[in-house]
Amino acid sequence: MRRIAAHYLINRGEITARPVITLDDEGCITSIDTWQRLDSLPETEFYAGALCAGFVNAHSHVELAYLRGAIERGSGFAGFARQIGAVRGNFSLDERVQALRAADAVMWAQGIDVVADIVNGATSMPMKTKSNIGYISFGEVFGLNSTTEPMRQLQAEWPEIILTPHSTYSLQEQTFRQTVEAGGDDAPLSIHFMESEAEAALYRKEGSLSEWYERMGWQCDFLDYGSPTRRIIESVPATRRVLLVHNCYVRREDIEQLQAHFGERLSWVLCPASNDYISGIRPPIDLLREMGCRICIGTDSLASNESLSMVGEMKYFSDIPLREVVTWATRNGAEALGVQAQVGELAVGRKSGIVLLEGIEADAEGELWLTERTTSRRLTGRGIQN
Ligand SMILES: [Zn+2]
Image 1: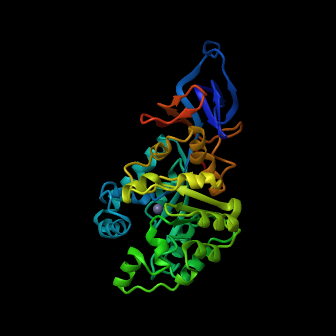
Image 2: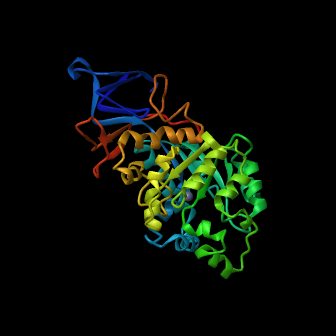
């Protein structure tokens, strides 16, 4: 048996003062109570800070961990894409595997239970079978000349991989539709969306992406949709769960149309540190909150981030009550991926992680806030099975 007490518990969007959680020898939660006097609770571990459920990192590319620091900050959207192509070949398989193993260990120690992870190849897959973290791997189909064939081959070897289109600007019509269909009816999709204003501009034959394609002599057969939003609505059945990633340039009408199509199955993943690294742009957080979007948080990859810390991302929202941001980082990600029965909140009977947030502040009304000093560390947990 183990008993864990702290100043606060943040769970299901609410704050409880003086929580005490009991776990059995299997790490399963047997009770969640409150304490009055600590000396009446023998053999209790006490932590200064707030407890919460293990995090769901709703967007990462763990296989790119070896690119930490390899791409300059502030390169811009097109510059980033070009540089990634240029440096990708400079590292041995051994270096790449070591880097992704280290990234996995740090994510676990800092409290991440589940990662929605993009893969372009098999490098990260053997690690995932041994990791404590539950990975949901999306095999990304990418490139104007691409077909689904390479990812189908990868999927034959690793059946847990779910095919997903990279974005609305990087796949031709037939490949995009075949990729969506390949996932069947139940699997979620994870699509990079409106990270740059060039994405919507492409559909008007304007902007940097359009000019780059023109220079290279690349044609697009999907511009008649008129916008990234229309393309998704007309290509993805409303029954699919969809994670849209980045969303820096979404407007009210995009959100309205997408919500009308997908309803509860739609989730909005924000990766603010990555946006800051690449372009200095911030996602429209006030608009997303106002429109009742299911906001999730992802770290993106170490190619465009200095760490894979969920708290590092949450610090971009330190003017929003912590209990709301914790919901984005836990339960919302679990719901987006359909794993909310296992992770995303603390409840009796669960074995998922308990995370300690240290260096937080309480105000006079009892609301909790992140500070510059806030860190997270895992106290317990078994994640979910890969
Ligand atoms: Zn990404």
